[in-house]
Length: 494
Image (cartoon, rainbow, N blue to C red; front, side):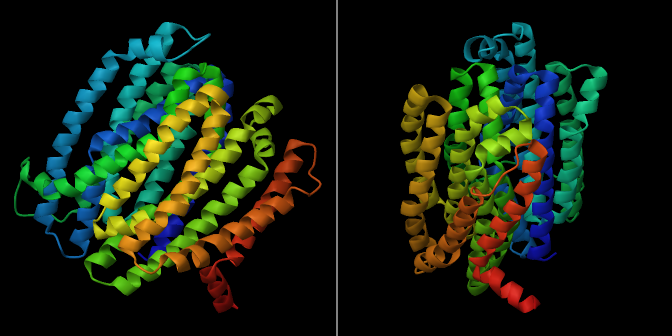
């Protein structure tokens, strides 16, 4: 499977699920209520924090699967590693899940601020969140292995099917069984359990069989990747803290209804990362393989092209969301008051996410080279700046203050730390990368989005939505004009 086809399949799946999620979220709000949706939003945040429990073993497993495909690791060693990681995963997930499950009542009473939902209903929802997040964590392990085998097309189709089940089919189920938080999370638990079983079966189908009838659990295979996994674990801690600490802080400071409104804006802005992040799933295994094969020229060529691909995905979405934030929220939810309230959050988060998507590109190289200490240092410095600023800004200015901090810190990271990272992993490339691959695409997208604000926009939702589509396409084309790869592809097609 070529990189182009894998990228196309992965992006198509991500875009589909993003669009489906955007369509379904207002329906969740109408069925459950804005306060209950605040708990659903907290559930998505909890799943991200649960990723810390993998101790960096999921990316380590993905990297070893990629090395197996390159001939650098035997099937027996890969099976031993998988079995060892499985045992450790199950033990850690069960322990932490049990602790949080037993503490659900205290979380509901002391942390969350429900004004209308009964206390027992909030407690039950937290318990079911923990169980579902634990199952999702186990599934991510096998997704990592499948990604390392470069089966992104299969994974894209699989994610599309089960994403549709979890996001769409839950609505008719709630209509049939009753619109309650317990029914919502019960459906998620069953769907996630089936999803995990299928991932397990597919992972073991990909690994060639060995002569051994049973693969024993041993600690030794983990020791071989422990240095890499610990660095990845620390990087994950920093990353999750960086990307989710504001959401966690606000969940304990805002009433659940207000937190639900904030989460809607953040979810819309997350489309920037969801689409551009699709490339990472495909590119990181391929870059790792090229590095293992010693193909440095091909590696750097792919990296430079990928930088432009990320820009052409991230900047048009971010600029349209920033310029038309209130209009987008109004089209989406139909609630003009909610759109006005959440628009500043959406605009600032969208631009901050674009900065984050581009600033993460040097990490791709560092991962492929197995040298993550510099990345860990950079993200640790980012967190050290982000944490006090978010706490201060949230206390004084609420959600909009946290959003402004998010944009500012990510801009500083891109401008000040990316050149440091490139100097270590790709000496001599930063200037050409920034001036040739990043700035032209971003500048043209921003100019086109800003110019679109002067158009005579219709006063009705559907008319505004119909105009937003060609405007978004025009911004995308403008950004593509800043890409040397896109211009070359267009000339070759003539």
